[in-house]
Amino acid sequence: MSRLGIRRRLLLVVLATVVLAVTGLVAGFNLVLGATLDRNARDLVRSRADAQIASRRVEQGRLRVGESPDDRATDAYLWVFAGMQVLERPRAAMPVERAVRGLVDGPARFRTVSATDTLLYAAPVVVVGRRVGTVAAGLSLAPYEETRATALIASLVLGAVVLVLVGLIVWWLLGASLRPVVRMTRQAAAWSEHDLDHRFGLGPAHDELTELAATLDGLLDRLAASLRRERRFSAELSHELRTPLSGLLAESEVALRRTREPEEYRRTLELVHDSADQLSRTVEALVAAARYEAGGDRGTADAEAIASGAAAACTGLAQEREIEVEVAKPALPLRVGVESDLAERILQPVVENACRYASSRVRVAISRADSAVVYAVEDDGPGVSAEERERIFEPGARGAAAGANGAAGAGLGLSLARRLARSVDGEVEAASAPEGGRFVVRLPTG
Image (tube, rainbow, N blue to C red; front, side, top):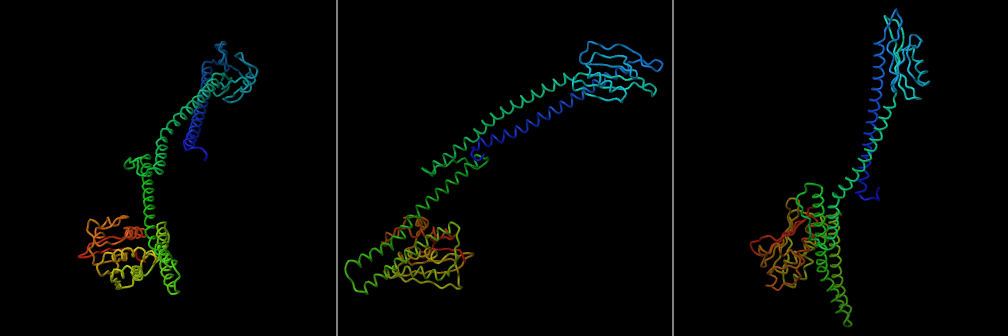
């Protein structure tokens, strides 16, 4: 069964059910018909015997011969006995005669003679409480058996015709019902490979077909979203790895240009080590984000240590632009429900962005709001306009202030920070501020 298509499996199930139902109906019909014919035959032969008993004359306590039976009747027989003496008898086969003799002295009863397919009924003739004779009637069962056989053959033929018709109708209905499903499945498969923007768009689900369409539309939406995340992840990964890799290449090239003093090699190796460490932490953060999106454990970390680590990662940029970075100590110790490397990787692009646009100062405040740890990153730069607060989180997008102060960057840091934050049920957003820029990072508490 598992190798058959669903159409054939459903057809077999329907046909099996119809076979059982038709078999039951045919068997029930023939059983009822047989019982009815048996009852009718018994009633007929009994009524003939009773009619003969009612028409008989009794003189001086003895049964007398009355009208002779119709000898031309071929399907009915009648015997009249006075004691064991036969007063009337029809022309009958010897098995029937022997069976009638066996009924003479007994009570009223039936007997079937299988050899001649004859039904017999014998009843005593009683006058004033004394038995004076016996009347026996016989009836050929051949017409009844013929009716029974005809009904059986007709019901079997009818059942076969019904089965064939039901099979053809069900095959057509299943094909008509499953054809849209097959077409939708093939379309969804083709769209998933070539064009994820197509949708069935059948509206709210109100039957099985529209429910399937809604399910396939949702599947295509998830595939499209997954593909967009993959593309964005590739862009973010290249952006995040570009800086440490460039540093590694630059330092190694400079160190190899000429022979240097051991102290110079040491400084170069320290720079290479720092770049490699940054590269390793970036990869670990991205892997951790992917693991969290797949449902892995998140771990916990100290909120202040995360802010300090993110600020330390921006030390070079802060010194280059002569920016003071301050991490405000929270009133109470707080922990976030995210591993330290990932949390720093979420917060660091926001702090780095503030260092790029600040005039002289960047401040990171830590607080708790409901079930989240909130980092408020504030700077005294030009700030972000209301129209740009969402656009700057798009991959490759940069605010208007970037051109004003010549800030470098590919415009992918904030996009990555928001994606990583949302992967752990957090958020990164630009907030309004009286002056300067203000970004809020929310991470779940640990």
